[in-house]
Amino acid sequence: MDILFLTSELQGIDKTGGLGDVAKALPAELARMGHNVKVVMPLYFGPDHVKNLVRVGEYELQLSDHATIRYGIYSKNFFGFTIWFIDYGPYFYRNGLYDEQSVAYGDNGERFIFLSICALEACIHLNFYPYVVHCNDWHTSIAAFLLKIRYRDRENFRGTRSVLTVHNGAYQGVFDRSQFWMVPEINDHANDFLMQGMSYFNLLKIGVAFADEINTVSLGYAQELTTYLGGHGMSKNFESRADHLRGIVNGCDYTDWDPLNDTLIPYNYSHNHIEEKNLCKHILQKKLNLEINDYPLFGMICRLTEQKGINILIPVLESFLVHKVNVVIIGTGDPYLAQQLSIINAKNPKKFVFINSYDETLAHMTEAASDFFLMPSLYEPCGLNQMYSMAYGALPIVRSVGGLRDTVNDYDHDPRDATGFKFEKPESIDLLSTMRRALLFFLQEPEEYRRVQINAMHTKYYWTKSAEQYIKMYKDAHGET
Image 1 (spheres, one colour):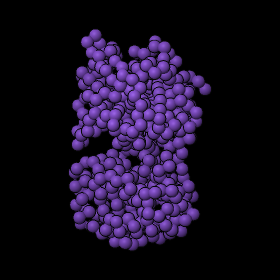
Image 2 (cartoon, rainbow, N blue to C red):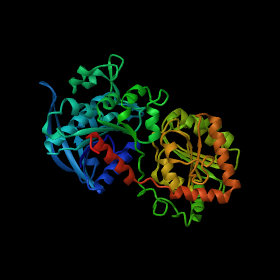
Image 3 (spheres, rainbow, N blue to C red):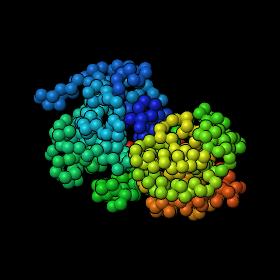
Image 4 (cartoon, helix red, strand yellow):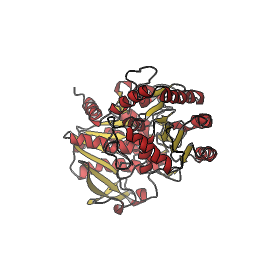
């Protein structure tokens, strides 16, 4: 298949979240399977930002009788596929991808509409005839609309279908009509199903309405999106496309997350030689000025947002720290949540450490040192950290939502195949109860803990299976069996 994959970020180039991981791993797996994949993304920060770029050409985008934008395309081969970078300084040479100091750029709608148009224009300029255009989140969802309306009779796209992957339905791309000036056709489709009020279009709603097939990144999250509580205000939109909505669990790229070969941890280990994991704990304790002991270590690496459940952890964290435990939290985000964690850190410096930054080495060391990993998310479309944690023998403690429900087997409900612990209600007391349950399990049943730990380390979510499901979705978009 000839696949055009549109993304606003990509791991190894520019990344802020899970979309970047998928945008690298899925195209790489599709290419490994023999498909011809072209990934399109912005050239952030200018050509000097990315090594080994090849300038493809410079083109004019005629948007009206009076508006022409001149932009460039650069190319790079990366992990078996080709990236086409859209080069336009006024939109992409900024200090961040989407925001600065947590304040979103005011013209984000305009910026990513431009990216989507240029991605389709690139196919025409570079003689590419995609079997499918794979859109990701609100940033590139307008491409599904453009294929149906503007480009439907263009030779390059007569046999093309579109799919949309919703990585996080809470982020929808709601922008004033004025930012849609490059797509005047949208005004002919203005209705309550695509808009927020009278003056704002919702890019994710547009993508859901016009994509041939839609998926999100776990079966559980696909089901939640069609409900009032889980649909982020778009439950009716997703429900209307329920026959074309599916869940495909993200794979995990274990190339960088394998305790046996991880170069960022002090001691390598496996399920056959797990004693070194405890040495990793002692090294991290020493590095972070914690007491060096064999207490169970509870790790957490996340963005500091309410979505990740920090707000239900903070009220009970000090109650948990009265026990013989260590807790390490790494993350940045909401300044108020960071302040609350810093206060608790100052009161309990020998048991709890909060790192208000993200450091790749420290993240790997924390996974290797942890006996349990906290993910009390209010919602979680898929999640990757629970997969990384299982690979490192850190049993996840998760709320039973979205991809967390799909990927973690709860000990209390399925002891034989257990890989961690789950709780249901998004309430502090339920989280505290589950953390204490895990603590007692570690202290009172060490042999059973080790068995479950080995279960977790054997549990793998490889991209091959996920990629096969994406291939099926591409064929379904064409009505093929």
